[in-house]
Image (cartoon, rainbow, N blue to C red; front, side, top):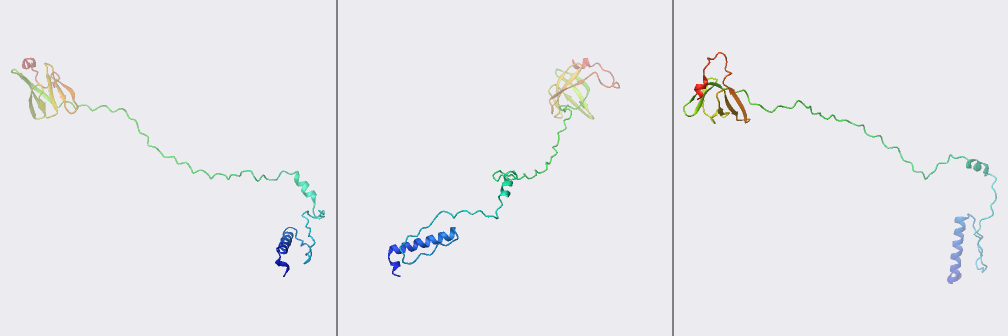
Length: 188
């Protein structure tokens, strides 16, 4: 064990162990074991042994494959097919039915009937609605619904207050069953 005490000897042994492990790893053959105590340099060849043609390798098979183009390019991007799209569900949208334009609201027919009139400085008329009778002058309001606007010889003008619409009560269009009267004397 005296040999391992010197640094030079240790380095030599370390070098031999490295070469042996490299030869085993790369060549599979072990180099001849060095002699202990020998100062001869060890030569290690890095060149591979001469290539000897192997009779079992048939090169004609390789040459035949070179002409064929059945080799797939491994660098081409392969995209999977996209999943099928979901079915389209159509919702029925309610369609607004356009009807005829709605006429604006109209006042109902006048429920008042002319009974007569008098003029004693202020013109007044006598009106009836069903069994109820009224006396009215210009600008009087009847039942919070009708306002008497004007009194003429032929007609009475009213305003239907809920819709602010004017209505006329014609004094000459009374039913035939009524006795005729000379109204011009009454209104003057």
